[in-house]
Amino acid sequence: MLMVAVVTDGRQRHARTSLSSRSNALQEKGSGLFFAPLLFLHFHLTPGLVECNEREPGTFIDASGREGSMQRAIRTVAMFAVCVSTYPAAAADKVVVMPLMDSCSRPQVEVPVVTSAGRTWMALNLGASQVATSSADPAAYGTLYQWGRPGDGHEYRSSPTTTQQSSTDEPGHGRFILPPLGHFDWRNPGNDSLWQGVSGINNPCPAGFRVPTAAEWETEKASWSSQNAAGAFASPLKLALAGSRQFVPSDPGVVFSAGSMGWYWSSTVYYGGSRALQLESTYASADYFFWRAHGLSVRCIKD
Image (cartoon, rainbow, N blue to C red; front, side, top):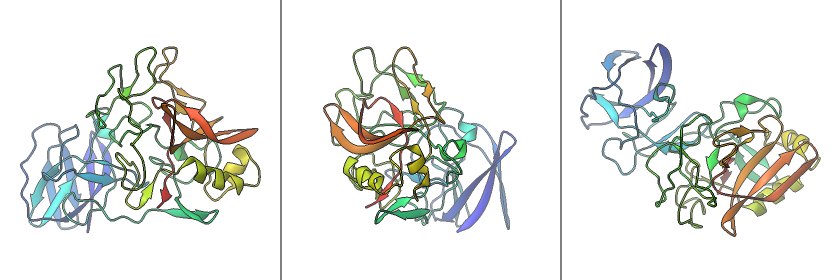
């Protein structure tokens, strides 16, 4: 595996390459500089989510283990294929760290983990850059997913919004969906089958991991030294108070209570909504009800 760096808009990005014999056409939108030991290449970067090397689908895993769709390989040079990922919103900031075993197939990556209450969990929230150093550590907050959606870019805290609900399991864009008044799901009709297990539809976690159930969150919570945010941070999971992203008309797309409250999705469905772990200074609940259009944190558990 070859380590490379990607520079776009004057900022250094990182990616990794893999062996491939497939040739890829040079894309003609945007530009960047690719460099690595023994290899120097100028390439062009096309923003947006498209398939990689015509695989179905292309995937990537970023530094925290979050998986999503990958942009196509830019060019194959000799036996090395360069793959990067971008998003419709702020595309220049979304090139990610990614290891590949073959060109744009599911990567094999060492995911940082911790053991708590007899179970193995990812050590970071999806999208986070580090393990929390405090309950209010912004670098540990990570991204905020609408329940059941894949990692398509909507989960970024500043992703653009749309009021158009999706009629399919994959909306096909990276916008945070604000359902119309009287609706509470990004999808219409809703689908209770999303995020159900390691092979579940739209599972946002890396290979071998999945979104925990409400019962698994309850077992984890019972092991804490105190049933509140302090106990959550003192646990091996080091859970941060990452806030939530609102969909209500009064605060459309606004990130709420980061640093003071935290919510973590479970895969458990309940009457058109889903259960979540709620954390605050004096209280913690593993079966809090949330509408699926909310954006909450995700912490993955090993299957």
